[in-house]
Length: 322
Image (cartoon, rainbow, N blue to C red; front, top):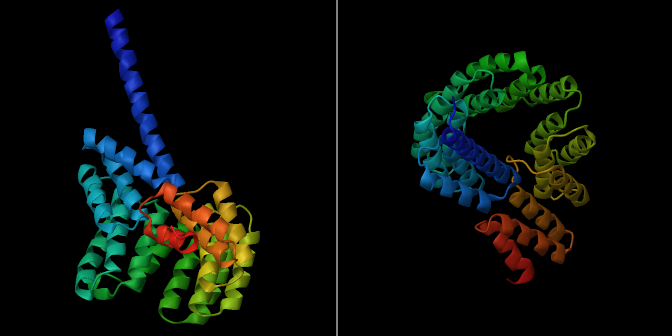
């Protein structure tokens, strides 16, 4: 028989659990929405009172990842892995941080980090064999890394076959990347177009073809591929952002780029393309089209979400003299 005191205690415990869950969800929502300052403040507060919170450590790592603060990101991702070493996603994020650091250091340091990247990605796949995203990150490593640090085309092909059992279209993306790495551009293009056909014109497939065409300096064709992307049904939000950023970098079709980033923001931002970076991109596009007032507004919005985003502050100083 439950006493009155026991019932009160049970209610209190349920309330605490509910609050804890809602806080965790809100942190994820802040991160997904690109409200980085709020996410960091909330997660730092949670970790100060509960240092052994692996999920919050991972989320904080990802927040610093978006800000490109790699050392801070590494510290929190390593902590998440140490607290919950059986979580494949935690290993995946730690591998991504190591990969970003490897791109920014000298050859000797990069070689050391490459082994860590491979180890974390392989562990992520081992722990969660159905995680296609982890397998594709591992594929990228196998293709780009030299054999001395564990890279290799055959390893990538083996991963491709597994990916193909879940997503046959994406299997051709792997073959395209392998062919491109071997400088077999004809085969690469054929595989990228096969990816488009098998995915029934998926926006991400058009994005990957556009990336290939940009690397081949076939800019007019790249722009046409991005127009096709803009017409594809139900594109993933981050694909719209990537396409807009590609047009901006190439100096092409700013009206379409502006439309795409506005569509992205209207669809609800996602973590892969945080809102503070999307508003910065929109500011750049408006500035390049002569709308300095609109650009300043977007830069201020970006800084309201991530006040340490120095790139946006520099842009705001440029257009508004702040």
